Image (tube, rainbow, N blue to C red):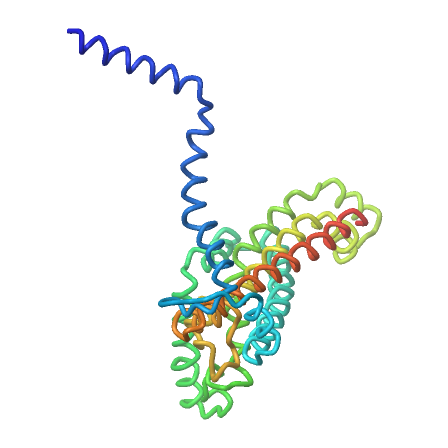
Length: 303
């Protein structure tokens, strides 16, 4: 009987303590702990090992900033940065131009508008690695088979096997997939444009292009900022598509920074060296994102 009373009192005491704790902390603390253990801690360990000569196993010693200095004279690293930056800028511009054009069409009264919206959003629900392998098959077997059967010489060879054109295949697939979510954001922005303002402009004699360029586009500035920043960040981090489409080839022509860090860091015995590369990579992405965000925010104010 006494034990039952003590157990009951213990339960009451625990409930009283929990009642004084903010329920938000009960939900947030486990997430914070897991995020620190599986994200922040490994990142800090990577920064630590970037100052060593570790190969990922065995003994190691501190080498200071030697890895960071060597990165700036490594041709393979510099090439991967040139490819990734060029790919990211081109893909970001093309994605936003195409997505905005499609979003404008899908917000008008067109036939099968709901079906078309679903079709254009489909790439967003597919895994990137799956998309990469599907397009790898199309470029390597599907299109080349059609080209050989029709006697079209330029279509008979896969562009993924051409060191001068393989980047184009990666860009095409990246644009096709990235347009999905970008279109949705632009459609949300277009639907937020006041209809009475457009109607007033029409009464004043403005044509479709003038209404879009003078009214709609300036009002889309916040949505343009979101899409441009997210698109550039996502394209700079391209990895899955490179793995599935080209494996960084032919040669190293489509070797992105992420792929170089993964491949040489885990299979090339350059764990510490590529950890330093990852730190530089993080700084580059952060700086570019902040500069881009500030410039686009300034445009929002001026618009």
